[in-house]
Image 1 (cartoon, helix red, strand yellow):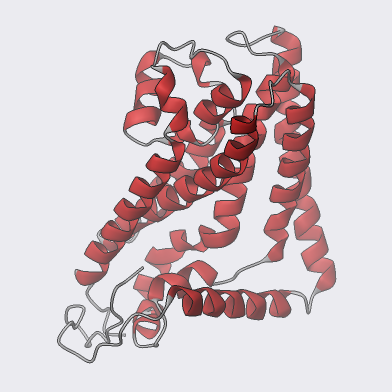
Image 2 (cartoon, helix red, strand yellow; image 1 turned 120 degrees about the vertical axis):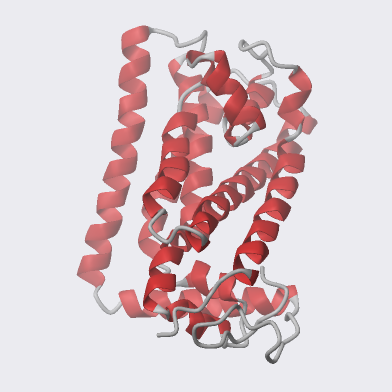
Amino acid sequence: MADTITAPGRGHGHGSDRHRVPPPHVGAELRTYLRLAWTWTRAVSQYPMALSLFTLGITLATLSEMGAVVVVFRHAGTLAGFTVYEGLLVYALAAFSFGAAQLLAGTVDHLGDHIRTGTLDTMLVRPVSPLLQLAADQFSPRRFGRIVPSLVVLVFALVACDIDWTAGRVLMLPVLLVSGVVICTSVWLLASCVQFFATDAREAANSVTYGGQALTEYPLAIYGRGLVGAVTFVVPLAFVSWQPALHLLGRPDPTGLPDFLRFLAPVVAVALALAAAGVWRFGLRRYRSTGS
């Protein structure tokens, strides 16, 4: 998040020479985010029928994606040596991580809209992190329609797969889930920050986020080595579902990458979060007000 909150001048730069407000405590920022999210939740709850229908639609879309995975595996028998239950494990890890990231910060991809309309300026003069405001903007509980089915499928897959539940794997499971959410949220923010420099680049950002989600819902071994290398070392989405699945299943990587990579999801999550925070600050410092 931005280390300072500053008020931009009309038609000028970010205005770092204007008044500065020290960053609040992390606990205070979390409480503010929860208040903003609760405010939006109360607003959309005024229309319960619309909220229910939207939630049902998202749930059905998620179940259809899961059904597509089952159909593909049932038709092929196995994919890259993975059974249908192991394929569902990969799918559920990806769907949960991206679903949680979209719930928590999916609206950051509207950054270009806020820049064009001048509403980002309004966020900058408030004594709250603009990133926090952007992430909580239009928060809607309908996105639980993706998270809840994903969790159900994940639990089913964990039970159905032949997993040797050692103490290390039991302890590592929540770490892998949290790391996946952090990685997806960071990728979402990094892709959205492109809009600081090209305000119409939302579709390009979505190609990384939603495209990455579709990519990671299947075992990466079905893709070419070049693509596997790109989503491991360039945009590290392999640590959202593929490497965690290999760790839980205790299987060697069929793509030939070293086994130690499956333990690096927490490290990748921290590194990517720091990179996303740095890019956000870089873009915010170079943001020029619309003057509107």
